[in-house]
Image (cartoon, rainbow over all chains, first blue to last red; front, side, top):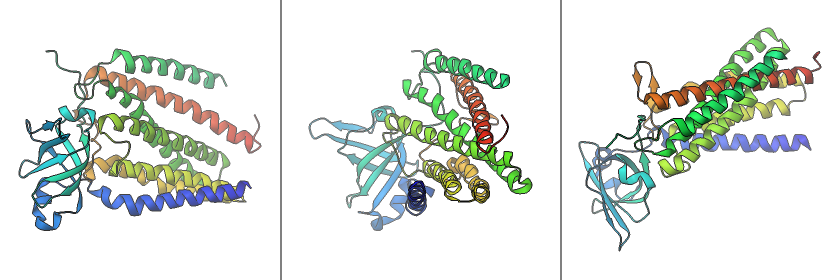
Length: 130
Length: 216
């Protein structure tokens, strides 16, 4: 009985490890593509599931409370990609300097994001006194 | 036994001091606000997991080389604790990621390689339990314990080698990117978790020794 349970657990662990290596590790080597990389792919990038990451262009955030539409622009300093999302962004997005979006590039050049992930730096400090 | 009691008392005292410093005495972060306090639990769990598997690595090499059962007791105990603290590092990371990144889990290299570490050493414990001959089980676990340790440098440098969501280290030689009061809370937590780990490892290794029929 104990042996059956152990074998079952071993199969689950081995299966999960194979799943991580085959499913996860390939995509995890390069977590996101930069705006330059996505635009360099040209038409082949359109409609393909992509994770796009970059700096949020300051002042580019537009939130329409009627259509629940969020628009902003991501840049890597060389190229820019406009992004549109219909999901509520993470709490810290309003102050975030950089973000990663998962979705697809439309034929009109606007990236439609299914999810927004905020990226933060390794710097930690208390807020500056006003 | 007296040394063990002293170690336990030191762990309790340091954990209380670390909890107070992390939760009350340290300031919130300019960007993350209060969420930054999760770091003081997350980073020490990951550090202790690395430390545990480093001990597993050394004890496994010594066991395969010298075949003394006490090296296997240490390797077995360190593996169990390493799996526990890797699980806690993954859980606290997930709890931290939800409010700050906006996701519980994502296929980032740091996260994937850490989940692999959890599974590799869970596998080592299972292989040990599955073997009919305890010495054969110990040898197989030692082999996994040595090879599996290759994942630790991959995890540590994943944020440098690969393009990741996870931020790089804040404390590196010649570069300190964390404000002094926050560094104090982190260092105190790291010390407290290390002493707690030393206490648990001694206790678990002694239990393994008694289970194997050793004299009390």
